[in-house]
Structure formats: C-alpha cells, structure tokens
Length: 294
Image (cartoon, rainbow, N blue to C red; front, side):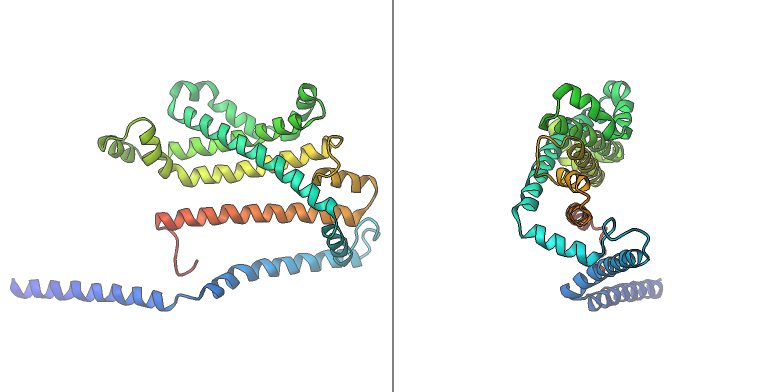
C-alpha cells in the first residue's frame, strides 16, 4: 500500500513537472509586442497591395475609359488634394456627427428594448418577431416614409438610422440574455442579487459577448442607413460624405468619387478595429484568449 502511494505521488509530481515545463515553454515562445503588431499588420498590407495591383490591372486592360475608371495613382493624388482642403474634413465631421448621434440613440433604444423583451414573456410574444422583421427590412425602404414625415431634413436621416440600427442591437441583447446559463441566475439570486443588481452583476457580464456583437452589427446597419440617407437627402448639406459622392457623380468626377469612397471604407475599417479590440479585451477577461498568440 505504501509503495502504491509513493508511486502515485511520484506520478503526480511528474505530471505537474510536465505541465510546468509546458507553461515555461509557452512563455519562452512569447514574442515581442512589435512582432505581434507586425504579424497582425502584414496580412492587411498584403491584401491592400493585391487589391491595388488588381485595380491597376483592370485599368490597364482598357475595360473602361480612364475618365470613368481612373487608376490608383490618379485617385491617390486626388485624395491628397482633398485632404489639403476644408471640404473633405467638413464633410467628414458632418457625417461623423450624424453617425454618432444616431448610433448613441440607437444603442439606448436597443439596449432597453432588448432587455425588456428578453425578460418579459408577454413582450416577447407581442413584439419579439416584429424586432426581427424590422431588422431584415432594407433601410432604403424607410426613406419615402421618413421624407413624408420629416421632409428633406436631418430628422429624416436620424429616423432611418435609428430604425436601421436599434433592432439589430435589441436582437443582440435578446440573444445574449437567452444564452445566460440558468445556473448563473440561480447562483446570483442565492447570493442576494435581485432586480437591477441581477442585471448588473450576473446577466450583463454573461451576455456581454453577444451584446458587443449586436452593437457591432448595429453600427454596420446605422452606417449603411446614414450613407443611403446622405445620398438621397442631398439638399440639406453640401459637405457630408454622401453629398460629395452625389456631386462627384453628377459632375462625372471619378477621382473625386473614388477618393471619397476610400475615405468611407477607411472609416469602416477603423470602427471595425475598435470593435475588434473590445472583443479581444472581453475574451482576455474571460480567459479564452491565447496570450502567446495575441
């Protein structure tokens, strides 16, 4: 019996030593911050180079005349020229102001609506499917009604942005709350969490990944709605990015049009990077992020 105990103890020590060795080996393989940044950056740079090369090849093929489809160099020169003047920055500020206002209001509406529907059987039965129907409805379809209600005004754009984003955010909240394990809810109640405290300390942290995914999707819907609104409701502003797209098309100024599209694309990439950082922080907090690889 004593020999079996000693053998088992020795085996346990060997397993622990093996695990320690694996942990130390993992630490030895940790890379520097600069290497991690480069590992995350070079695929994007490679994709950008491939896209520019493909664009240049299409231009060289003569598929479209240069005045209709200019090359990357010409568009780059136009972008630099636009960046040196006030028009681009004024349009950027106008568009970002509208986007921030509409998105913040959509987040407030979506969070409150999602929490209410997720925790109320009556509300879920009454409007649960309606939220999904609103989410699937194209934002552009709301503009005739918005123009009838608010004419060609900022309110019309705001109306469509909120209707485009809030249902997506609400569905993200509902999905996140639905997947909170009942065991966590029982544990929270046993520890005295009730009402708002149950939401604050149990439901919200457990549903946070799905909520962040809903916020990201809501931003995508609000951004698309905003761009559609600025393209349609041109008369209220001559500086927004959407208005600049419309004017460049009417003037057949392809370099101006494409350079504005690039600015819109870069804005989307920046926001996506911000949501990606938030998602990574959440996964790190939950302990599901590989520290050595990220």
